[in-house]
Length: 79
Image (cartoon, rainbow, N blue to C red; front, side, top):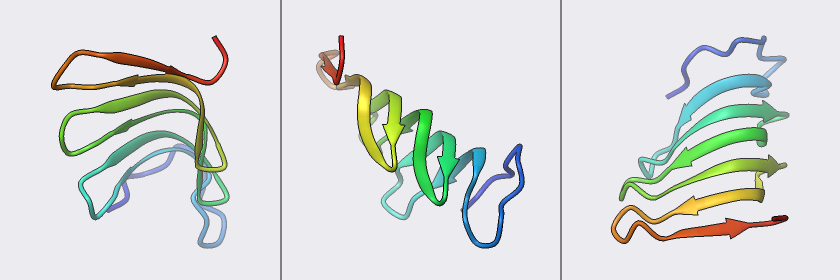
């Protein structure tokens, strides 16, 4: 399920800022570039865990991963 993007979707690619609901109940809200999570964003998983930070072509590169059950945080990428 896709919610409206602030910028246009060019062709069939997601581009700009938006929110995407995945089949596994993961929700991503943030920037997209050519269908990839790219730039600043937040990804929330079905169990409540989430990652907030930078993505580069779908890969988490610099941010914090939060574990809902334990409250533990893990830095990903540069500090």
